[in-house]
Image (cartoon, rainbow, N blue to C red; front, side, top):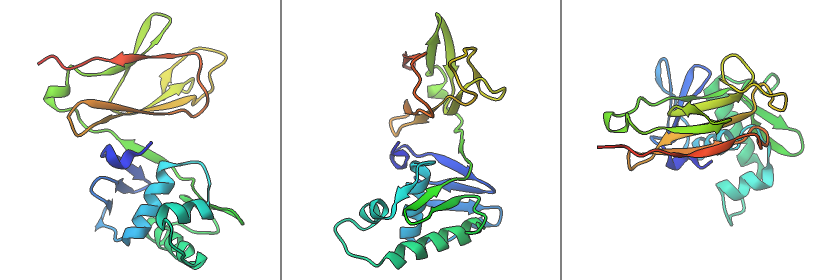
Length: 195
């Protein structure tokens, strides 16, 4: 998804993770993470729920550099400590034994309030000739009550996640991450603001 360039925030339990400002903020203020630990958390959240191998994480964190495997374990311990996580009963960072790590917690996108100039800009999906509006932030499609409702036997309860983010040019930017392959829908274009 590459959300570090999109300027989005996620709720990770009681904490807010902001990749753009490189902050992890809780009720008592900013939670300190070393730069490498922050980068590892960003990578794990970005690729959630997929488990990333230790080799893949080493390449992303320390490209073309040899570092001890203990460095990665230390960063994971630092992240768990910051999130109040427990390795034996993880809420956020799961160990894939003898493989690597995955972000397994709930990461809820914090919706940004639209600027006045963006009020007329929106994105939507077309389904059977109907427009299903998408808001800035996370949009979940499926059959659950708390999602954009799609009545179809081929659609799962939480079928797909579409994230609409404001880009640096003040226009909405769409980043879509399928939860499952979705051939039932055809994404429609994005309207532009009328100034």
